[in-house]
Image (tube, rainbow, N blue to C red; front, side, top):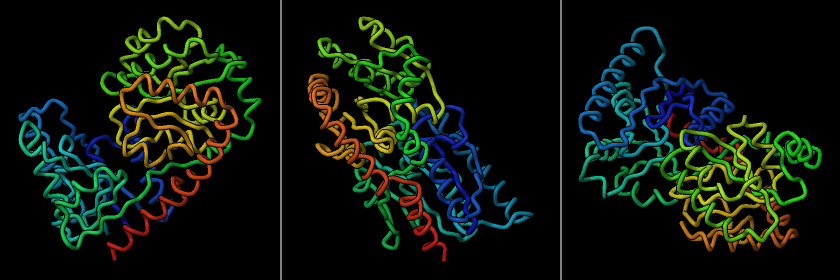
Length: 377
């Protein structure tokens, strides 16, 4: 099956790491692992974060131009795809290309992860909202990665549209492999980054950028300020333009907080496998990919009680979920797990088993392939 793939929010080969980029890459990997011929047909970033009518009009016009270019390409010298798949469709980053091409080629238009907010129907992103509504009405298949989005999606899909929930997924192999030589790897990381191997390691992984990420680190700093009497070391993996701001939030902790910068996936896996607890407030996060990575490595977690996080962290079983923005509740949950090593261990084992069954490329990724194959027949 030939698949035309497009991600209007962020291309899978975008240079800046993010959960969104990771999911796009995993979708490509799943389809290729299923034996399908996948082509990234456009790198147009349709995102407008400012609500600029002029910018949105320019993006829409360029999208229409790219759609025409693709149609000429398919007509001239490239065999047309069997199906179109757009990843992450919402009003700030609508798809101006896929619906036009799919309609002209008479192939199924499919979407993985979409959201539709009634609040966006009026205001600076009304044009993008209408584009999302029209795209959903055309879709033959909508794959939901976040249960919270489904009520809004159902309002706009057609009667014949297949709406299927698939758990977010990634390649768990590097994280499972890192969990094996835990003791030796922990000693190596301690020596390499000046960490105290005798203290419990708390781990936070995220881009250091303004907005929700910086807000998450601020909540974490306030929570850890309530735990000064406990022995712990915080390791922060990630980098970004707001690093100075984030570091300032942790100024009073001295050597107890280590910023190790952006790391390759193998090093992230090593930190996941050797740490004692993932601590990530996850402010306004839709899908908790970092929680899946931690689970794959057998690491329990404390996070925000949001629908997308609750879909991957089972409260009381693989970690604790607390009210969003509540630093006191976050501190209490972290304390409970710091003080109970056997509970942390049990949660880590449960997390690894749950993630392997529900969130692995081999299982959830195969479901994506089956669903696309079904609508392309």
